Every structure is written in structure tokens, then in C-alpha cells.
Amino acid sequence: GGRGSTAAAGWVLGAERDTEGRRLAGRNLRSAEVSGGLLVSEGRHIPLSSGSVDKIVCNMPWGRRVGSHRANRRLYPAFLAEAVRVLRPGGRMVPLSLEKRLMDATLQADDDLVLEVSQTAPKTARRIDA
Image (cartoon, rainbow, N blue to C red; front, side):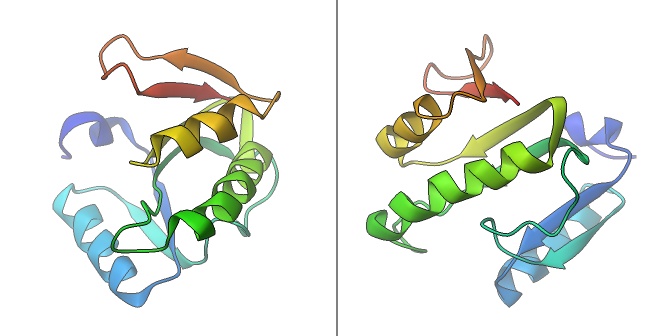
């Protein structure tokens, strides 16, 4: 079962504060044949224990249809701090965003992150190890 890289996933936990977003995420989980669950949560307050997550893939608000650049300037650093908290040592995160300058500035400001340019992704992609 599963397609692409999700086939190797043991269990996936998603978090979304928006009802429609949770509905769509649930549909995506079922479509990919991935076992998982969804939390009512948002990125500034992840209700998980420190060091309990292996990998994070997140579709950040881009400030266009959802959110704004002004709101993202507060959200991105708060979310990254929470992501670093819940990631286990050596854990990885892939944040998706069109806010390239803001994401780069936020990532560069966090000394707890190791950044690598992906060899298979566009030059703007970064692999993040906590």
C-alpha cells in the first residue's frame, strides 16, 4: 500500500486548526493508504512530548489565500521553535512555503538547526535536521 515516500511511513499524525483543512488532510491520508490521525492544533502549540517526532512535513501559510506576511513573521519563528522541540535528535523537517525570504531568515536565525540543500530538490529547498 501507499504511494511514493509515504509507503515507508509507520504512522502519520497531522495537525490542522481549520475544519476544512482537517477534512482534506484526512482525504489525503486515505488516498495515500497511510495509517494516521489528525489533531485539532496549530503550529505554535504542538500537543506532543519533546523529542517524540521523527519527521515533520508542513505546508506553511504562504500569506496569500491563508494568513498574511505580517502574521507569518510571528508564526514562522514560533512554529520552528515548536518543531525543534518535538523533533527527536537527528529528526528531519521539510517546511513548504512561498515565503522564501522569511523562511530563510527564520531558519538562519536558529542555531539549533542544521541546514542542507537537497541534492534532488530545487535550489531553494532545505533539509532541516534538529
